[in-house]
Amino acid sequence: DTGVSQNPRHKITKRGQNVTFRCDPISEHNRLYWYRQTLGQGPEFLTYFQNEAQLEKSRLLSDRFSAERPKGSFSTLEIQRTEQGDSAMYLCASSTGHRNTEAFFGQGTRLTVV
Amino acid sequence: KQEVTQIPAALSVPEGENLVLNCSFTDSAIYNLQWFRQDPGKGLTSLLLIQSSQREQTSGRLNASLDKSSGRSTLYIAASQPGDSATYLCAVSLSNTGNQFYFGTGTSLTVIP
Image (cartoon, rainbow over all chains, first blue to last red; front, side, top):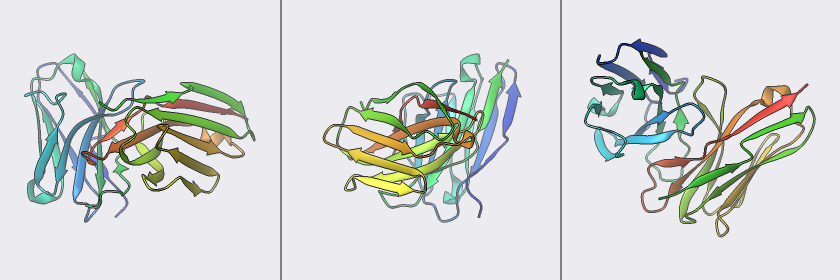
């Protein structure tokens, strides 16, 4: 296993369309996180999974956003009715189930809404 | 809410210099602090993790220190190289959740050959 994998790397979509991103975490990592990063800013937390359970959601995660992690393996993040303000880098990270362990990030999916 | 600040926002140094990047956080009840590197348009690469019970961690030319009581961490880079040019981000997780990281806005480092 070479790390956290995210697909696609880039996505250009028209405003109003739905998009879905996929994240494959490091094998046996129980925890999976989604973050959003805009230009010149640090990543902002969106949501967190422990195995298949979504345990935390940021207020940034509006009702147009939904995340799933079926079977506690890969995760998907869907954005419905995209808006220009959704343009950002969407980052996925994973870590083991222990509290004080490193988080490992993927290469991100760059979303551009035109 | 945890606020994380990184100073300076940008730094330019000649190759070979030693340098220090600063990170401060408002809530000292952290579980751990992690330093990351980010190249333009790329994801984050983990550099060092310091647990709340530790005071420093070292990896190669990198040394990170943590002072929880004062809410500060520093990342020391020795003998800088052009390949070190990137944005460096620090992130903390809190004791009350331990699940999400709060990030600073980063320090953009340029090492001039």
